[in-house]
Length: 81
Image 1 (tube, one colour):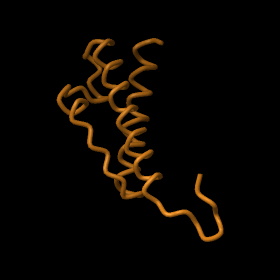
Image 2 (spheres, one colour):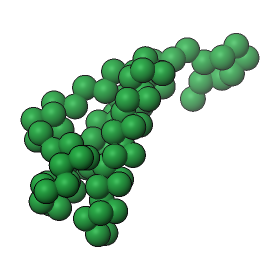
Image 3 (spheres, helix red, strand yellow):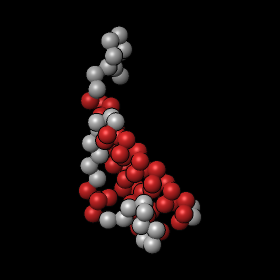
Image 4 (cartoon, helix red, strand yellow):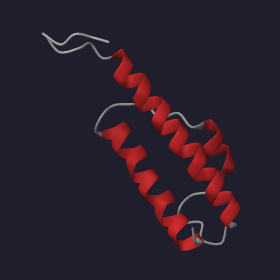
């Protein structure tokens, strides 16, 4: 993946993170991502740093959403697995 494409993916994940927090009320706590201090608008950061940031952010969003879904009660009439 080219750096420009990677930065675009990074920005999309940042949008998803904000959506999860603001619209869904799901806290996306990403200490490893925050510690990197690489944001999507850091166009001069190395490609490898963006790759690592994307990995951490995607993993954290996935974990937060998985936890949120597993804590929900099933709808009436729905049998839980």
